[in-house]
Each structure stands twice: as structure tokens, then as C-alpha cells.
Length: 137
Image (cartoon, rainbow, N blue to C red; front, side, top):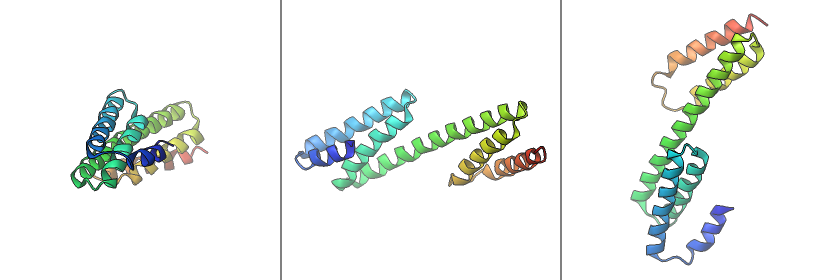
């Protein structure tokens, strides 16, 4: 496991090596994010966060935590978009069970997102859509 390896290395690192490693993990994460490799970016950010928090770099912890939150938001947006698209395709093919399942996944994502600004109407629409589809069963 990469975190365990990092734990071992961190015990023997100088301040310069720690700073350099944090910067390196952030750069790798940003590169992965630009390449839409979000899970890889997430791992790199978590490695940077582990080092920064382990050595009490409060400012870095805040900055990296923000980057992770922004990345999580992108991942959730993609998952939501996918669930809604697959749900719509299934609905058009009259595969109502599949459509309902994907719309419910979309609902779960919307409900999980802490920032509910604007999501209330989307949640209502999805609930209404699911209710209408259930009538076809």
C-alpha cells in the first residue's frame, strides 16, 4: 500500500525532502486531474495530505483539503451525469426498472452532495420521474 510505504519513508525524511515530496504529489495530482484520471489524482492528493498533516503544515493541509473537495465535486458531477444519461436511455428503451435504478443512483448523489443550492428542484424532478416510471411497472 502506497500510504504505508510513505509512512516508512517519512520517518527518515528531511524537511526539504518532505516539502519536495508534497509539491511532487500535488503536481502529479494536478497532471492526473488534467488528464481526467480523477481516481489517480485523488490518490496523489491524499499522499500530499498525509505528509502535510503528519508534519503539521496547517496551511498546506487547508490547501490540499480544498483541492480534494473540488476533485470530489468533479467526480460526483461525472457520476451524476452518467447515472442520468443511462437512466434516460433506459427510459427511452422502455426498460423502466433499469431507468428507475439509475435515476435513484442520481438521487442518492444529489442527496449526498452537501451543497444543496439548486439541487432541490432537481431532486423533486427526479422523484417525480421515478414515480411516473413506477406506474409503468
